[in-house]
Picture 1: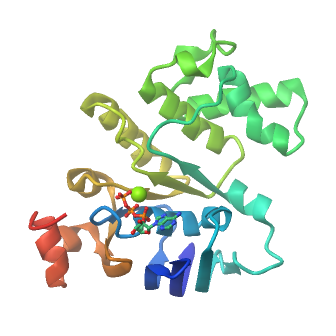
Picture 2: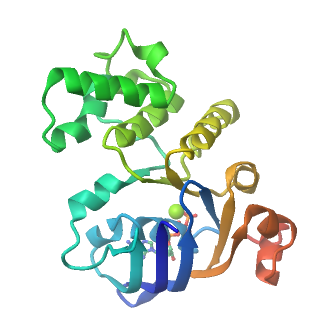
Length: 249
Ligand SMILES: Nc1ncnc2c1ncn2[C@@H]1O[C@H](COP(=O)(O)OP(=O)(O)OP(=O)(O)O)[C@@H](O)[C@H]1O
Ligand SMILES: [Mg+2]
């Protein structure tokens, strides 16, 4: 297991958005989180890199361990956490910088300034998302001039540049057409050899195609967590069955 939560609760002021979540996420798998809008998927994802800390009025109880380290312990190094656990959003959030500078951004934060080292990191990261051949002669081009799919790939490359362990993806394909979505899914299947991926998706077909394990959430509760096959073909909880058979949500 790479991540373990125990009796995890999260409140936005008085509103409880996560209710006693106990889950274990396995290394080098793709874990898919599904559930109707507002059930707490994004909130749960943000738990894993402490992004909720930035939101006013948030209170968290319970524990979250990554590699057996309590990431909510006061001594835990937040900068290191954000390096270990990278996040990709619905819309690609490439910076208004060149392709090169987007990817070199993280390594520069980590005080790497040597041009040769940076170039190697940029090239390696682009290659890992299959953009290198396309862009190798264009590294000074503005990142925002790329297609949405390539920008999303670039955002993933930007995370890989700081050598994370875990990639959080919050509906990473929702702004993409089906062909671009297929390409990002292929990329995820390739990346899971090296990384642990947690993806939130509204698209159950997508979860069925790429996830090894799936969690179904409802009203802040983790109702079911099992292999994708079990969740989609033989769920234990009636509420899961109702959701996957399209009765609500
Ligand atoms: N910053 C916030 N302040 C107060 N309540 C919030 C905040 N962010 C989310 N919530 C509430 O917490 C609950 C869970 O929200 P969250 O965004 O995690 O759901 P979600 O499953 O990701 O939904 P969607 O599928 O629409 O993205 C919702 O009721 C939402 O209104
Ligand atoms: Mg969300």
